Length: 103
Image 1 (spheres, one colour):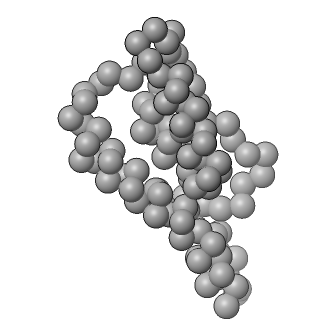
Image 2: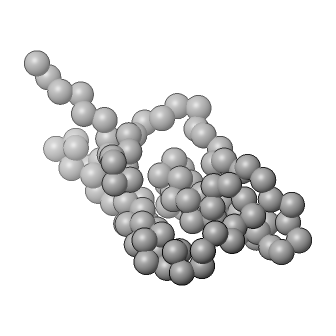
């Protein structure tokens, strides 16, 4: 029962991850390599949502997009990491609760 609650809790975050993955697969290649920062803004947004959740991750991504303009110096700008991580990320990028199997 507890895993059902965790799955429901992570559903909005994973919906955001899915939308960002679709954007990065379909739309992002059309722009080419134009980002002044590393990682690209869409990769930063994906990492921020995975690390901090949909609300705070979206706010971090919006702040990053506001800094990304033609006069920006650019450079390396990684997502700030949490001190403790409660979740793991699958190969596709979905966020899941770690399994603590018995046996």
